[in-house]
Image (cartoon, rainbow, N blue to C red):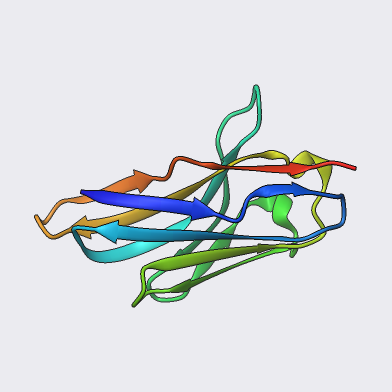
Length: 120
């Protein structure tokens, strides 16, 4: 079994910052990609940021330099530092990992999601 556990969500004022963390655990042989997607009410889930095991990153167009993703591959952790938050960043943020299990299966896993609310 594989689990992804997110933490760090909450309520923040516009212009504020939050750091999300994601911890992967379980029968994991290797992780190729970790990151976050988000889904606001009535909208489709969209890419926020992902980081690959080689350190390469990819961000959603809306990020525009405000967010930074990082990872600790050895500890199976990923972090998303979010600065200059806007009300439109309000959404449930889901951790995602593309990984290979100890049984040899290559697949993607999702966390349960953490709410981020940006409001005065």
